[in-house]
Image (cartoon, rainbow, N blue to C red):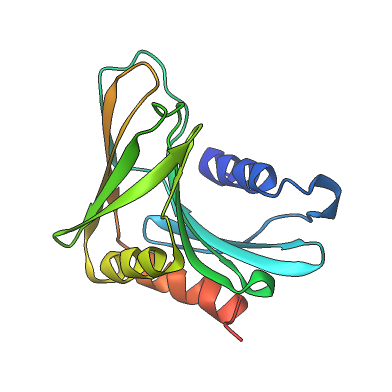
Amino acid sequence: MTRFLKSVALIAALVSASGAHAQEVKALGTFGKWVAFTYAEKGKPVCYISAKPDKSEGSYKARGEALLLITHRPAEKAFDVVSMVAGYQYMPDTDAVVTAGGQTFRLFTNADRAWARDAKTDGAVVQQLIKSSTAVIKGTSNRGTPTTDTFSLNGFGAAYKAIGDTCKKP
């Protein structure tokens, strides 16, 4: 398993705070820069895609791995959930900003993660990601360091389809 896949599997385990109820993460495939995964949580399927940035900018001394994720949880009727793992703790009370296809979206931050505020925004972000070639996410660390991460969307549509086929909307 590559370092990237191990990192994503670790994040999946962390995302699934239910511990004993989570099962092994299974890769559905690699699609360009994106990897699709599934696992069971409390016996229910969860699917997500993730990618690392192609380019990360900022004057930081140390930073963990950054990832952009889209998650489906059919049992909770939660689809297209957009999240960003920054690789650092965000500055409290700040937003991360996603730009794709000329549109900009604000994500709220908490600790080292950023999410869309509602399902409507999640859906709008995903639709822009499908139509675009890159996504840029800007955030600020709790030390005041601005960062810019640029993600290739090469393979995003195919990876997104793979999780949609596995974790279908009811």
